[in-house]
Amino acid sequence: MKKGWIIVAIVALVLAAGTVQAKDWKKVRIGVEGAYPPFSYVTPEGELAGFDIDIAKALGAAMGAEVELVAQDWDGIIPALLAKKYDAIIASMSITEERKKKVGFTNKYYNTPAKFVCKKGAMAEFSRDNIKGKKVGVQRATIHDNYLTDNYGNDVEVVRYGTQDEAYLDLVAGRVDLLLADSVALSDGFLKKPEGKDFQFIGPDLSDPKWFGNGAGIAIRKEDKDLAELFNKAIDKIRADGTYKKIQDKYFDFNVYGE
Image 1 (spheres, one colour):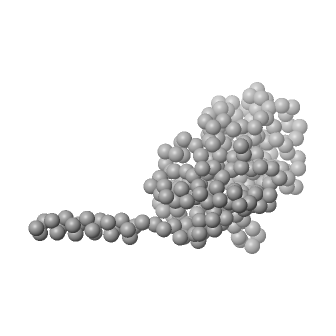
Image 2: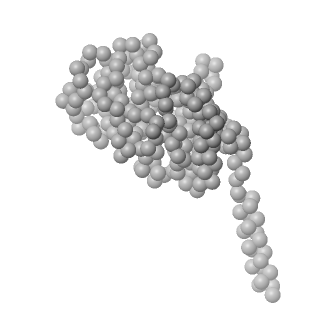
Image 3: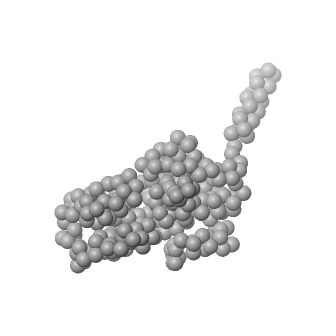
């Protein structure tokens, strides 16, 4: 009889512990980069801003959750998620098979191609022969880094940077010949600014899922499937009620969500 009560007590304790540990997601901490305009950047007043930032806030509102933004350097953004510094990443992170080995993802919330950029008149057309021996800048540990290394690593000198802004500075200074990055980041974050007036896109749109994945998604820890589902429902909600388009139109003059 005593054994039966002991078993019942143990089961009750386990269920109680599970209840205590269950998350209601009324507050969600979101890791952001803050150095990838126009998706995320820091204003002169020291505030985080950009498409990713506005999307994060809109998704929180759609979920009925308080959002806390946590700025994190790109190189450590996944390790910090796994270390529970925050609960999710909204930082233009492409959904790739390699990243899926470490984290879970929501559905995409936008999808844009990658492109090369170089100085106007530097080359008539993009080809492997024309870029052979060139220095090509890329943000370190990104899908663009992987694509460049795998496809042109034996032909060019790959120069890696901690942030996209550092890469822009070196391109303007002539320390690299080309950059590879997201086309929208390059356009709005560089080409449309005074320092980018002497530069241009070159070569085709790059979107092979093998390297570029299936759009940018929200990364979460694999065990937090309930949070991923809440985000997916929130993405659908803000796209249906017009909130997504309002945010998109603030930064872009085209459909950033993609097909």
